[in-house]
Image 1 (cartoon, rainbow, N blue to C red):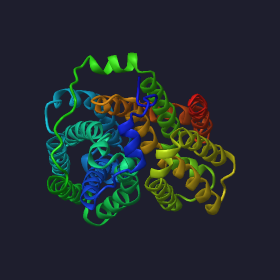
Image 2 (image 1 turned 120 degrees about the vertical axis):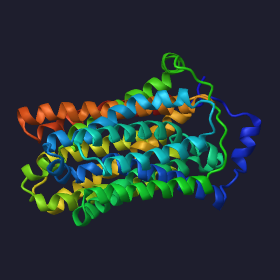
Image 3 (image 1 turned 135 degrees about the vertical axis):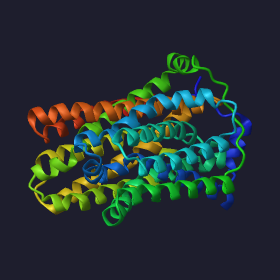
Image 4 (image 1 turned 180 degrees about the vertical axis):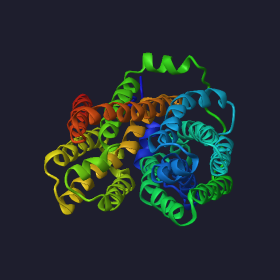
Length: 403
């Protein structure tokens, strides 16, 4: 029996009647973890804004330079489950501190690289940190705040993703434009050390509650139907999103918008995603399945409208707000699904499985989308992405009906 089906005990019923509230100190701990998420996510995607200067200085094409994003994603998919097993006896606070230090060192290594091979090696370390950090931090809200505030704390932790899109990447790109790409990566190193200090000061000791082996991951998938459903949700949502969003720049330009408008429109998308993430706490706490169905509709509709209705700046911004708001709900909603599905002591296993599927879906979506764009143009990936969101709506509505 999973927590999706678990009945309330009398003690639990009492706690629901008079729920405990999180203290300011507990919210500061949540903010410290969110800062760590922000640093990790910015480290993962910042090279998108620095591909041209890095490729020019190190003598590789922009396509080859794109491996700086692809490689960490694939490494993270492997690192997530491995890290849970290898660190199963360690205090989770110490694990987060070590990973923040690893991100800082990886960015220093990338900033001082003289060859692309050396830089790519540093990016492998970023991938290790991404996978391990997500596997640990994904369910950590359960241990930082009382039960009534877990949905809001989860949304706050995942707000670091939206903040990386809205603030991290534009700010890093701006630093790179003015002071060089190496300075941007060194700035990330400083931020990673700041996150490490915040976690050290604000996050309490969190002794491991995980007793996991390598066999635990396939065992959990085999015996827990709700976890299998979560993996399907992650696959369809993330693959559908990235098969289209990876190519949003050529899509917008193919629709008649100038290249100079793209960065501003992406900022609009990121801002909508961030606002939705922060505001999702009450939604996912009370209407999880409805939220999943709604985000599927919003994202699919955004892609479909982008395919044939966007020809000016205003309509493009409106469609990206719809699409971005839907995507902003994804991480907290899906993560809450896994936390509800897993038994106590298995939350980190479930979240590591989500991290694996999430990163593999990013790679699958962007890779498949590349073939489609080359074969039939950028707009065609929008219809494929929208189609992949339909099963999400069906799964969520069926789960809601059963509940």
